[in-house]
Length: 294
Image 1 (tube, helix red, strand yellow):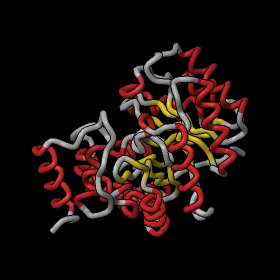
Image 2 (cartoon, one colour; image 1 turned 30 degrees about the horizontal axis):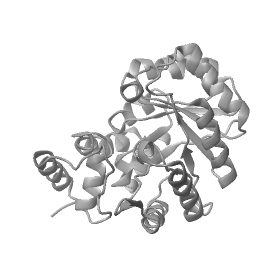
Image 3 (cartoon, helix red, strand yellow; image 1 turned 180 degrees about the horizontal axis):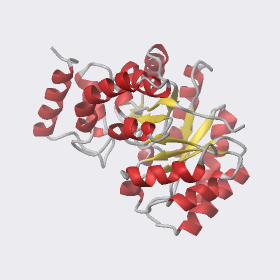
Image 4 (spheres, helix red, strand yellow; image 1 turned 135 degrees about the vertical axis):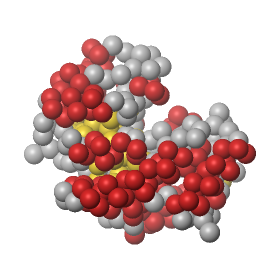
C-alpha cells in the first residue's frame, strides 16, 4: 500500500529577516499549523520562494521545519529542480533529514518532452526511496504533464501523489480516472479544491492555509467525510480570499496578507517586489470582507 498525503497540506512561506532566512519564525509558523489542524507541511515549494534560496538555505529550511514539526505532522519537502541531478541531491538530503515525503515540480524552463518528464521522475524515484508527489503547474514551468504521462509514472512504487495545478478540471478528472487508487491527486489551486474533491481528489497543497489553516483543513475534511453541504459553505466563503492571493505573483499577496495580520514582516526576495499600493488596498478589503480585519 502506497503512503498517502491528503487533506490540507500547507505550501508554507519562507520568512526572511534582513535578507536572511528567519529560523525562529519558521518554528513559530510550524507551531501555528500544528495547533490549527494542518495535515502536512511543505517547506521550499514555490510559495516558499525556493528559486531564490541557496542550496544551504534550502537544506536549512527543510531541517528546521522537520525539527519543529517533531513528528506531530508530516513534512513533505520541496525538492524539484530543472536539473535532474540537482533534484536527486535535494531529495537525498530531504530523506536524510527525516522528511516524510517530497514534492517535485516538473522541470521548468528546459521544457522537456513527456518522455523527458518520465525519465526525470523515474531517475529520482530510483535514486531515492522516499514517497514522491509530482507537481504539474504549466503556468510556471512552461510544460504540461499529460494524464498518460502521470499514469505511466503512477506505476512506480514510491510515486504516491500528484499536485495538479493545470487549471483544467477536465485534465484533473482524466488523471483520476486513469490512475484510480494508484496515486492521491490533490489540488494545487485553492479555488479548485472542492471541485477536484468532488471528482475524487483528496485535498489541496494550499496557499490560503498560510492564513486560514483551520478553515482549509475543515473544508477538506468535510469533503473527505462526504459532508458536501459544509464543504460547499466553506468553499464559497473562502473563494474571494483564495482569488485575492493571486492579485499579483504568489507568494507576494499571501506574505503581504500575513504582514497585515501581524504574523510575519512580509519580506520578499528579488526579483519579487512589494505589492503595488492599489493591489495592497484590494487585498486589505478582501481580508476585511472575510472578517480578518476590523
